[in-house]
Length: 141
Image (cartoon, rainbow, N blue to C red; front, side):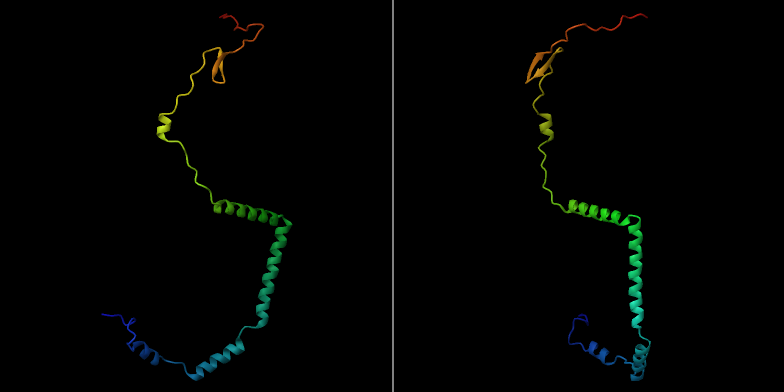
């Protein structure tokens, strides 16, 4: 079964259009007359535009008096910077670390003995301070 919408040979759509009710000429004339006489006044449209402009100017004046314009400008510039950061295409960073490298890495150099420190990979003796040797006070208690 084929749909009546897909069948161009069907005269159903043409028949519906031909039998569609139409308004009387008198009704059309009355509506046209009403629209012409009671249509929008041009002054009402200009008043709305003037009111919106005055309201916008008042808001801008109020914001300027308390420093809100500078705050808004700063917020807008920060929003632009954040948008640049989000849109900026970054390269893919490849990490050269894996579990195997962590497990099988070369062992760190052994620690030097007490009284020595490492200089260019070699343990050397540290020089002792000359002068009075400081000891803990004797136990008295």
